Image (cartoon, rainbow, N blue to C red; front, side):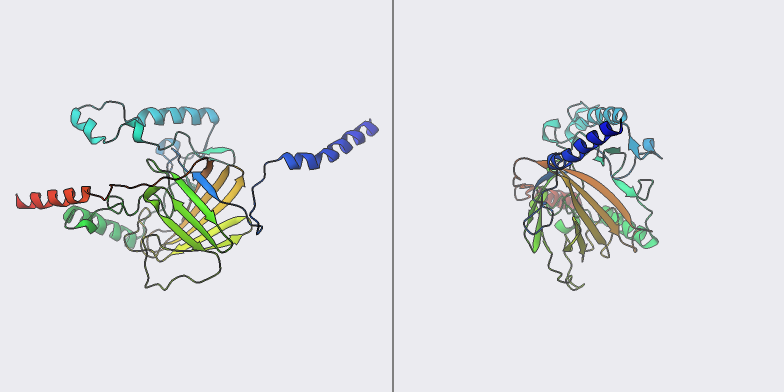
Length: 315
C-alpha cells in the first residue's frame, strides 16, 4: 500500500509542471508588469448600493442570481408599454438602444448584491454637514437656475462627462474601456464621451492644487501585480455621489486571468463623507474595438433647451 501511494504521489509530482502550464495565467508585458491592454466590458445590473430586499445579504446563490437577472431584465425592458402615450414618449429609447448588461457582478466566484464592499452593509456612508449643505446648494441651483446658460445643465447633458469616470461605473450603454500601456504611461480610454486619461507612472508629483480638471489629475504606480491610480485636483462640478473638490480617488486594476480584470476604487473625501467607501467592479475582456460616441452630434439639443427656457421666461 505504501509503495502504491509513493508511486501515485510521484506521478502527481511529475504532472505538476504540465498542470501549471495548462493553468490560465495573467499575461505580462515585456517589462514584467501585468499586461492590462485591451478592450474591457464593465456592464452589470448589480447596483452600486445594496437594495433593501438584500439587506444583510452580501452574496446571492446561482439560483437567486438567475432569478434576479430575469426580474431586472423584465422590469427594465423599455419595449413594455406604459400606462399612457405620454409615458411611452418619456421613455425616449426602446430596448434596442440599451446595453446596460444582463448579469449580476461576480467577484472571486461569488455573485454580489452591491458593488460597494465597504462599508460592509453595501450602502454609501452618510454625508457630513458640509456635504449635505453642498448637496442642498446644488439642488437649489438646479431648481432656481435650470437653464440660465449651458453651464447650468449637467455635465452629462452637455456631453462632457457621463459614467466614464473616474470612477468608472456601469451605465445605460457604452460600458467599454480600452487600456493602452507603455513603460511610463497607461491610457484609460472610455467609449462613453470618448474620454482618455493619460496616467504617468514615472513618479512625477500631482499638479498644483490651483489646477482643477473635470477628470482630475491621475498618477499611477505598480503595487505588485496591481496598477494603482491616484486621482486628485477635481473641480467643484465633479460629483461622485456627493463628493466635492477635495476628493481623493484611488483605483486598483488587477488582472485575474486571460479574460478578467478586477477594478476597485476607494472614494476618500472627509469633507463630504463621514468615512471612505470602496466599490469593486469586474471587467470582462471583449473582442472588437471602441467606436466614436458623438453624443448629441454637436449638442444641438442644448440650443433648444436654452430657447425653451427663454420662451418660458417671456410668458
